[in-house]
Image 1 (spheres, rainbow, N blue to C red):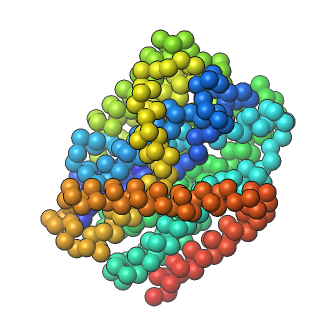
Image 2 (cartoon, one colour):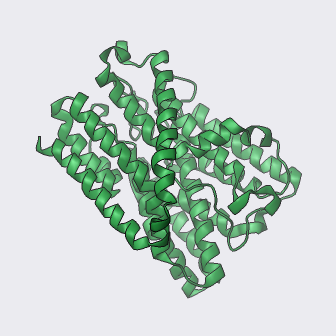
Image 3 (cartoon, helix red, strand yellow):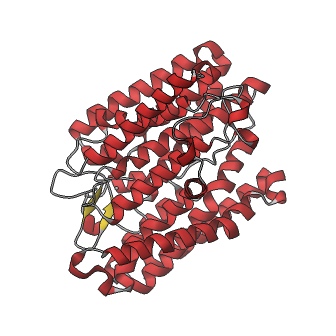
Length: 424
């Protein structure tokens, strides 16, 4: 959810710039399914969770993150001028959930089955991501002007290999150069984190389990310091590159490591979660295109998300439970990864396919609402027909090697399709 700039046509995902503009993401962020449990033991009272340690409040956080991102991208002049902070919320959630799973396995067995971990990540994230990349490549061939094909081909290839954030960071922050896969920068950050983080946790555990918290804290503080420095020197690059974002993922990991030690009394838990929600709402409403972000300001939404997660460790019903546990909120949270994947390509490609959709250089409200509806429909269909069937297909679950073969095959297919744009 980078801060988006307003290019004549629509808002685009890209880092902030000092010129008049408005900038963009993560779902996740992309991100991890909300089934993580705590560090070694559950992070809350078992009665507060569903099967597998399910956290409705974390699912609701994902719904909030993707919703403010989509609104911010569609209507950059709307009250949610800081909706780009949704990516920061996604990063904290991902750090919390992934670390919860990893720490539980390390503490429980003294080892980590890396092949199974990476295979789970591949089955969870890549099928839908590759589907959208092929869709964008096809749509670019049909609707996007030929001079832009090479840029699409390069970014689709980089997205399939998950180093797209580094590619985008080397480009000028010109909104006219942004493509329909620009939002894959945040997915690249998360995949790079998933690749390295298990190894770091395992090394720290082997050295001494007692220094694990200190080690992660040092890594996080170093990343935060670098973020503050680089934001002042090169804000565009600071928004995109992985080292600047590690501290947000580490913050989620610290919350996971604290485990049930963070379980709070009912009143304290409600106050903590209320403070967290207030911090995120403040960031979404007050931050804008000219905010010095990420830097120190990123602490506001990131710490806010962490506080909500901490408050959710209480076994008691909270003030937000009627809303956050409601069916619509949980549905959006469940679809948040797919929603994030689909919404941006539609925002960018619809004006090419239907030139009248962006009369006056901006998307009208009816067109924006239609894009939201189409994103929801595509997210639901891709989850039901692609994500879940592949993720839970028994042969893949039983055999990580088969999963990795499928991953390589998928990368080859996507890169072959992208090469058609490059060669054309």
